[in-house]
Image 1: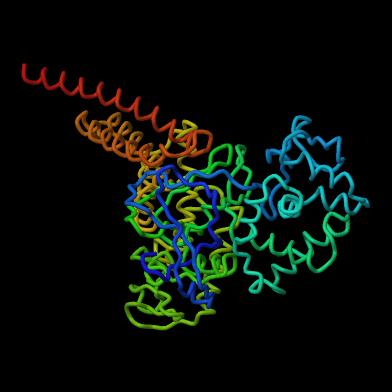
Image 2 (image 1 turned 180 degrees about the vertical axis):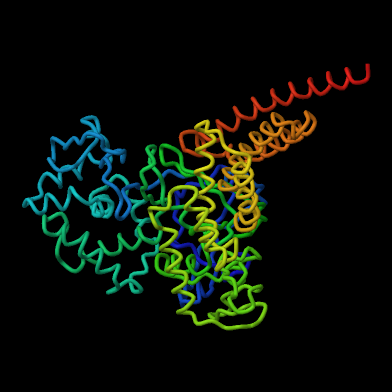
Length: 524
């Protein structure tokens, strides 16, 4: 945020000699004596990243390899060495415990060495063995504790890790504290992998706290969801608009770029929530996971910068919208006030409908969208979730070569056009989501133009105009997706967009030739 009371980074730490920075520093670590948040998180030194000079959109702010990567809480079983999906399990022949994807992964440094040695020494009952091999919640905390205690060759990064914020007192004796004690610590204590004394449990809880507060969700090359610790990136402040774009490659190296112009001295900020989530949802995630209350410009505006992402239609006047103004839900048109519990009940019921697994077919989704449209603003986050699902279905239908009617193609265009202004507001500048949506939009524009030409509803000049419109969409999509790592879904989409743009330009040249030829014939 622009003022000094912006949300602190989820994990602030003391800068140490040897921190990785670009050769010509593009950011600095600043310190404010401020109130960190309205949850009374007072710090004498709130640390954050700030621009050392003016930064242009697309410029690299930092590139950072993770300190450590591992399965997220409640994640699917993956190889304990490379984190790939396990098609045919291979149990490590040294410790007889670690589930790997292949014999080659036995020598992977992620598992080989002290970790493998400690697992080999564990005394396991059948129940203990089943616990350790059926859930991986214990793996990342255990791996970190092994490094903290035994990695004598790399002490400094693990000392820096321990300086990250864990919010120990805010977490103590809460449900998450007890959950980690029951699902992680007791299992490791039972087999002797960590001690049962208070000091050992305190360290384990601190490790879990640091992970929960500071880790970034990342994807493996097979798209398995993981989490990783990035010491420098974790110092970015939060803002629900943000000014950065993050991308992680197949080696888990994170590249942070400016998504908007950042002036010298401004905070470098990232949205740690989803851009299309409503205010209460975002605040709840930050409150429970990062332990601060967000008071950014977007959160403080009941209309969410005019997007109405959390607005409901007023059942009394039927023309105004109900907004949450200072913990009070009120129609901005007629002034009617509504009970918070009633609003929450409406949201819960609608959420259940949206999450209903049976509604995966386009007609069911369109029907639900029409039903919810009587209750919610067309930009409400639940409505946008349904629209994104429909766009995904329509895009797949196009890519599979289905013969779609003009009506469905027009509907596809409408959905994209409804989504784009919202994205431009809540995720301005360099936006992955905007790039994907623009690519999605160009497909029905081209197909509809072809249909209209075939049905004689358009001449070649009109057809050319539509192709040039699609070309502009593809160019903008490519300009946004070009920063994506090549092996990611978005990176592969960038390759498709580049090829599609090439083909489209060839078609445009052919149509231009036809237009010129037709014109020449008409004047002869």
